[in-house]
Amino acid sequence: MHAGDPLSAVIVVDDAMCDGLLVRARASGRRRAHHNLHTRFDENPQRVLMAALRDSYYTPHRHTQPPKTETFVLLEGRIDVYLFDDDGTIRRRVSLGDRCAAIDLPPGVWHALDIVSDHALCLEAKPGPFDPKGDKEFAPWAPAEGSEACARYQTLLRAFGGLKGELS
Image 1: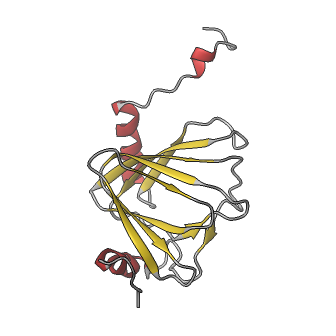
Image 2: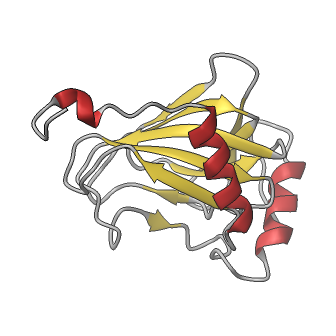
């Protein structure tokens, strides 16, 4: 194939790619890894294959500047997605897993992922371009990734069982 051949840009997400991503996640301090399916940060949409382990912590965040919709399609495992009010009150927990599992989040919705199974693989898509400095706004009411409070916060999230409740 020559450089201008569009078939040379085809990416196949297969067992080998997913297994390699899981190996990288296990070696990562963040306990997750990703593989960009897009080739440039200015590409639209951005598409990312993600692998995460149960002990990976996702700080609650939202996408407002600029407003971006975010879609997660679960490929393997189980994930709970927590949705919050502006004050950090949990409004809803959505459990993804088993079959045909995806969630589409409108711009400005505070959310966090929690890996329920030993590991999970998912595909994330959102509009580009991607600017790592301003892609997301982290919740001021939640512990920042890497802080000692993350494990306790995850435990409190996992104890949530209703459609509305507060972490205290």
